[in-house]
Amino acid sequence: MDRTFLLGVPLDPVTRTEALEMIRRFLREEKQRHVMTPNNEMLVEACHNTSFRDLLNRTTLNIPDSVGLLWMARFTRQRLSQRVTGVDTVTTLCTSLTEETPIFLLGAKPGVAESAAQALMSSNPHLKVTGCFAGTPREEDAPIILTMIRAAAPHLLLVAYGAPAQDLWIDRYLKELPSVRVAMGIGGTFDFLAGTRKRAPAWMRRMGLEWLWRLVREPKRIGRIWRAVVIFPLLVLRYGKAAPRI
Ligand code: UDP
Image (cartoon, rainbow, N blue to C red; front, side, top):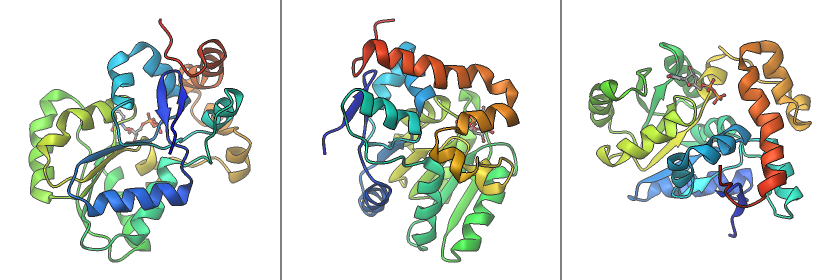
């Protein structure tokens, strides 16, 4: 499948069903894979953070998490099938997992991963959650986190430290976690599942107005929203598929 490029970052033109099928297949194989959920803001970050951009070029699957990526793909005469969000992917994936695929939830504020795990287990009693831990992406916390995850031996590791921290964490430590077959950076997914953050209504998501919902509910995110809604399209207008030299 040909990948779509925006600002030097590859994006996979998969449907929700294809993304799920691929992740299920990865979970059956021994190889280790990193799945990322890029959005507008992450592509802006990749313009000036070259190690983050390099990482986005090394991951197995980059599912297009935001509607802005679809619009800008069309603008550059490329194709992305549909928006495939991290939260929907995790939710649907976890409804079909069995005891054979243990999972570990890392990140978010203390207690949030546990509530998210409860929500996932209530829709799938066969789901085996072998650990939840808030921790932090700081280097000094890594030894304890790695010890916990090794003891829990999950096949699927979900990491919620926000981008780029969560994906840089995975890139740095995945090799030290031999049981993990798929690691995914999943942003605010645990908050949505736990109910500590409310998703925008479906009509707002469809119209690409999620940013407005976030602006009203969390005005302190204005800088991030500005980068996603204004800077990102301007950068694509200027540089298109290529990585900018800035
Ligand atoms: N987070 C964390 N530690 C950090 C930074 C963020 O656990 O040092 C968590 C935060 O609590 C949230 C998740 O990372 O659950 C994603 O945060 P963000 O607000 O960036 O969500 P996004 O907008 O990426 O969905």
